[in-house]
Length: 325
Image 1 (cartoon, rainbow, N blue to C red):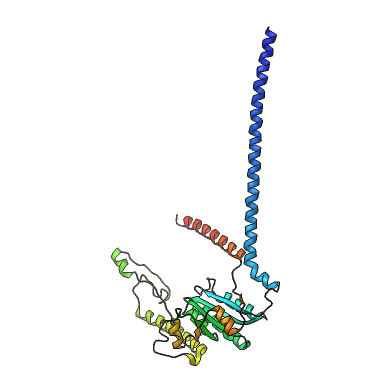
Image 2 (image 1 turned 135 degrees about the horizontal axis):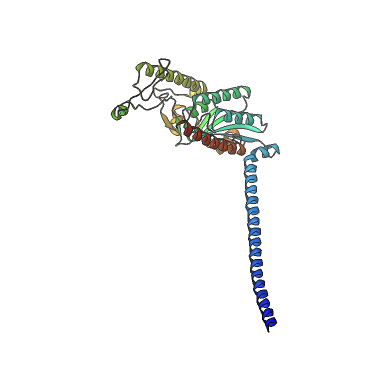
């Protein structure tokens, strides 16, 4: 009797142990399955990211690849874009524009160059660099036409550059001109007085704090800066006169810094005619195919630059926190 009871207990225990084992096996199997599924999704997303990055690199390098394979082995019009503020730290800087121009000139199938202009201007130094490069190119390649085509705006430093080209084409509603120089700032002297703030400034050199916004303006410094602006303005005027020649219909307001519509600009001789990129390429240059030679920052350079900037900001904030303690 006791033996039968022992056998029954063993049987029940064995049944219970088998049930627990089955549950554990199912849990382990489910865990392994979930890990396998997660691994597969991880591989999938990593592969997708890799394909995306490869695609971005190909897109960034496509113009260079196309040129190296000789796909552009036909007569074409080269396009070089001057878009946005013209400054050394912007994409529309002298180095990029000049390098684009030189690359277009070296291509034996380039029959003409269009400077696609859409800029409010910028640095007179950067504009001067490009202006001189265009004039140098025209002297070395007199049979290669260089035209400026304005879309929305070509003002100030942008017009400085455009005036070096053979002709300037505009839209009726384009804004063009602004032959002038500007320097602006703010003065906070009265605001500081109302707030009871005292300005403490120590310099070595009478004009080291030139036009300091927290100090009363000095007439001598204002006259000096006005003379400096006038000098740069005269350089701008000379460049425009040299580039445009007898086409300019000079009036008292021509070099005043005003901007004009494309229609009025043609009347004043600051532009030559109406037309867009396609029209100039087909009807003026005679090479309908457009090829973009605009030099752009490479994708990897952009990524490296952003990473470097972020790292620099992080280090800078750490240093600042420690120095303020």
